Amino acid sequence: MTTKTPQPSLARAAAATGVERSTAEAVNKASQRPLYEKRRKIHPKAAHGTFRRLKWAIMAVTLAIYYLTPWIRWDRGPSAPEQAVLIDIPARRFYFFFIEIWPQEVYYLTGLLIVAALALFLATSLFGRVWCGYSCPQTVWTDLFIAVEYMLEGDRAARIRGDAMPWTAAKTARKAVKHVLWVAIAVLTGGAWVFYFADAPILLADLARFQAPPVAYIAIGGLAFTTYMLGGIAREQMCTYMCPWPRLQAAMVDEDSLVVTYREYRGEPRGLHRKNETWEGRGDCIDCNQCVAVCPMGIDIRDGQQLECITCALCIDACDSVMGKVGRPRGLIAYDTLANLDNRAAGQPPRLRLLRLRPAIYVALIAVVSVFMLVTLGTRANLELNVLRDRNPLYVTLSDGGVRNGYTLKIINKLHRTRALRLSATGPLPTRVSVLGNPSTDDPVMNVGADRLVSFRVFLTVPATALQGESTAVAFAISDSATDTQVTYDSVFRGPAQ
Ligand code: SF4
Ligand code: SF4
Image (cartoon, rainbow, N blue to C red; front, side, top):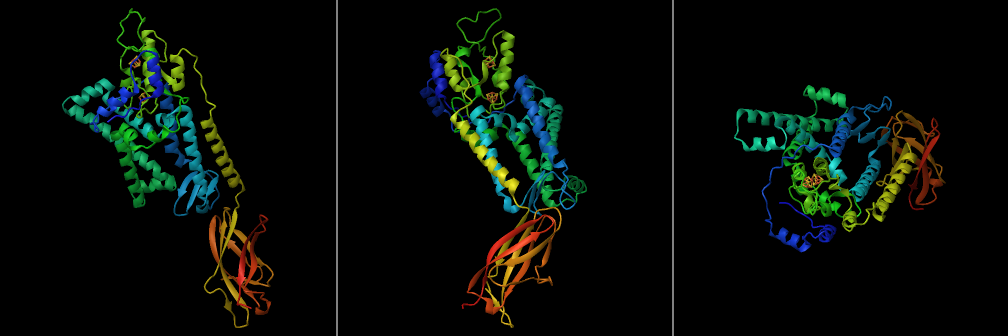
């Protein structure tokens, strides 16, 4: 089943050139289509040109980033992992080069996702579905799988012929080798993913000796299966039916967004053209179907903007090549705005409006969230103290008449070395501080290991005669003389009613 969205501006452009294609007619045609259409296998033809080269380059960069990142080392000292990017689930840490995110700081990841989403909105409002066409993992891996298919089974015509012919030993062998290579790519893809969750060299050795945790093999198997299915088998079906982004992106694109367009005012009326025939009274489109043949989504861009179009621009390469051969100007299919289609059709000069309200709002939001995150990241404390006062019992009366309160102190040391922290409690009451397991009662010192969250049981004791009421303010302080750092936490001391 295909879904084509009638474009008002294209309809206007069509009307301006005398081409009869009204919106009502398009809607009528759509309503006559069956609700289910069997999948037609798409055999995309190999494209050659600027955008194909750009896509190869982006594929190489994105695959290199994905496969190589877990192998980058980063020295954080002896007490921390030396993998630059690591999601350490047992230790509840996310390491990204010099940044270390603790579980309490997960809002940084939320902020990062918000910035990434806004950047995607911005790119879409400026350049349409540029993410889908060039760097979405579905596009990158599908391109890779199609490249393997092309290598083994030939270009479009050979693949169509091969699929139609009966099964022979040679055909079976070719298909088998293709699927083995696809599975190998899928396993490598799943394999690379698990290296983000453990020290990559150690995990690789464990995997090779079949001594890695079962969850690693399960994750590799699951990801390999989805990669094989989505990149090798489902391909364009994933983009058309499973991904929500084609539906959402329509809200970010407007008449001034750059999208892949067929310049109907220039191409129509289309038709075959023989050598030495005049170009007078006809359009530049020679109806060669090359733009359709290279399209990985199997659509015809000459039908207007369509939900299936991922803006990969391969039809531009194909058509530019055809235009070069027949001696007509390139750009019959080109990146352009829908507003410009109207302008050009009306004989007015085109204009590119990158500075618009919508992108400006996205840029402002990205700036606000980024600055907020950078400031909070740059000023975050490397020592944190949290105090939980015992609620049951609220206080204990000792045999000497003193009153004691119990507290649990949680101390986070974000430095990669052990710290000796002196504890004190200040307030209007003469308190005696003691730490469970620590014999010192005079500002006891507590050792907190490198990059650790440690809990201590702490007691404050006050002579009964000194109590001033049921509840009196008290402030805990931990100080690190080596870094001249002090952190305080306000709490209360509870006693019997006076
Ligand atoms: S490649 Fe160009 S000339 Fe050929 S059918 Fe497509 S738009 Fe027309
Ligand atoms: S119509 Fe052109 S830009 Fe759109 S998916 Fe097909 S080849 Fe890519």
